[in-house]
Image 1 (tube, rainbow, N blue to C red):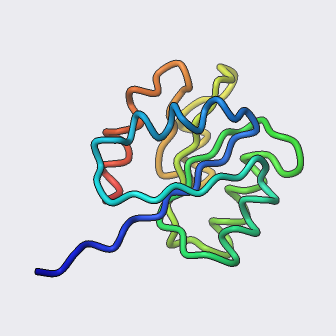
Image 2 (image 1 turned 180 degrees about the horizontal axis):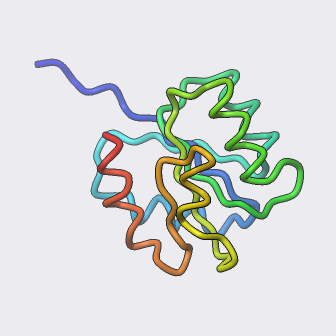
Length: 121
């Protein structure tokens, strides 16, 4: 019997408390490995050096915000789906999707993260 290769999920947020929340909302998905980054620049370095299957990123961060990261990933690693999760209510889901994100999940609705992630598997 062949075992599944774990999917690698890169969690990008400058607030460490959200790493555990993201992982908790994805716990029903088996075979996940989580990587962490606290800025867009750090996340991009991770993607350049490691296999990443999905990126879940905040928008407002120092040192390369989520928009910067989304632009870099859609330009250089367009095969990696990006889910944007933000607590900022100024952003419209349609605008985020038009920039290349596969989905947008408001941080106040992180319960939507699991179903959104399931669509990408």
